[in-house]
Image (cartoon, rainbow, N blue to C red; front, side):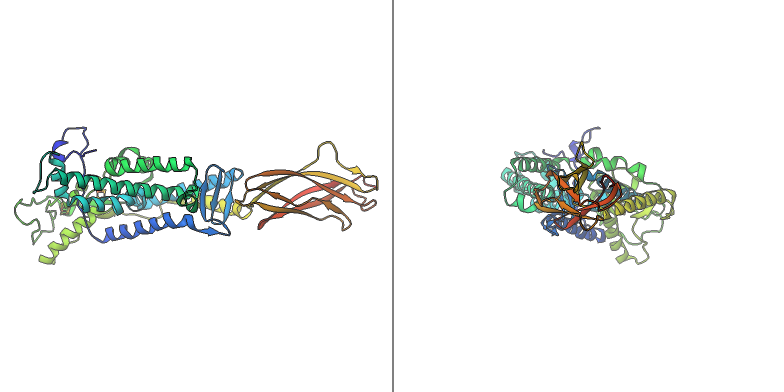
Length: 464
Ligand code: SF4
Ligand code: SF4
């Protein structure tokens, strides 16, 4: 996993290791606070309960999804499909409007690399130039008085820190599937901990070696970017009209010069290139590898802020967020995504309003419409199939309505374990001569936990 310094990796097709220069600026502050907020969500949400249920949990073994007090099972497939579609179209709409802001600010890969991995690397292995020098140096030689031991302990400490970050993040991810108390309390199954280990290992390899290659070669979202964006989407771009032709900076002179003319404003300091975690020179035009992280924007702004100190007439920085042509929020692509998203959310809302934690199905007992008992009462027997979609056992009771007041129901209360289904008989009887109708409407209400569901059926009689 030893990276190849640029000088040794110039051959075509060979990976060029990227040593991203540290950068500060407005967008990096936004990064920082967005990343911190997302990490708080990642860690804290699995501890929250709503109405005694996990606020959010994807319980794969039980094929159950908990979301804001609701419980969704395999029987709620349509709701789950609508949820997935809503998430997809939100991403499509957001991407059409704002390009790859997700990649630059909210993708876990970016957040963990920016918040933990790059700072740890800088802290333990020094500045960009020092890291390059260390990697260039054979293990057997020294640099700046430091000997092999210096390189060994720094690399060892860095990888140990990366392993700790990977393990912690993997545990945090798994809490969304297994439950925070369960996994942090050591009560999860060996399979869960095994999967956590695999996830941690994958992240460790990503942190130590794979990095930007994940975006360039593996991420499916990055692959279909081109189909989702157009020339009105927000991208990071270089103002070549003002920037070109570039003015080379002599190597031994200070890189920043005053009195930069309005044309050819780029002083070719290459700071925008040095800070790029994707190894891009944004001055070459829009590139698919660009994740819109705006490190180059802050870098160029920093350069121009210093230029402005010497010449207040210097214009704005040359790299910034922009659209390739004047942008309108309302255009065919965004309207299509917006309308579809509204339809999906509307359908989801309507179905959600009718959603229950009880799944119940009522059938007439096979082989009989009605029976006249020896005491003259008319009896109908039904089979009630009842599923408890909650995560705790519940006691269910069945009551009836719409029937004459003299009617009686026999349906003992039943306790159903979470995720289990029971089938129970329900007997309804009416006294003789109650009604001359051959069919009476009958409503059965099943209540348990904090939910109730009403089933409509009919009661059959001889009509006498
Ligand atoms: S070109 Fe700029 S915005 Fe794009 S990845 Fe590189 S630093 Fe980030
Ligand atoms: S940081 Fe700005 S001035 Fe420096 S090379 Fe990049 S575009 Fe040119």
